[in-house]
Length: 117
Image (cartoon, rainbow, N blue to C red):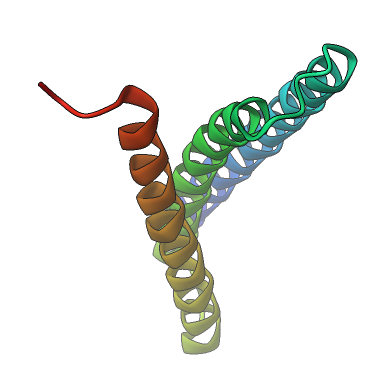
């Protein structure tokens, strides 16, 4: 029974990781198209670049959340303390990246929407 659980959990984690790759591929393509439009539209100002960055950052945050979910699932089936330690380090790095990126997104979004009146 335990072996079946480990196989199912590993498969679920792999599917989630594949989804992360798809999200990042889509986000990258969207960012490239956005930059090409900015270049060809001669709107290379900070506003156009920041909008492309903003959308790309939102996708990256989503991908990091899914990657963290896959890490949590993998930790449920980790066979050794070494594997658990590696997963914990990876999860901590991803969580830190996510936290800083969300802070940047929130700061940019406040500037973008203007002051609340």
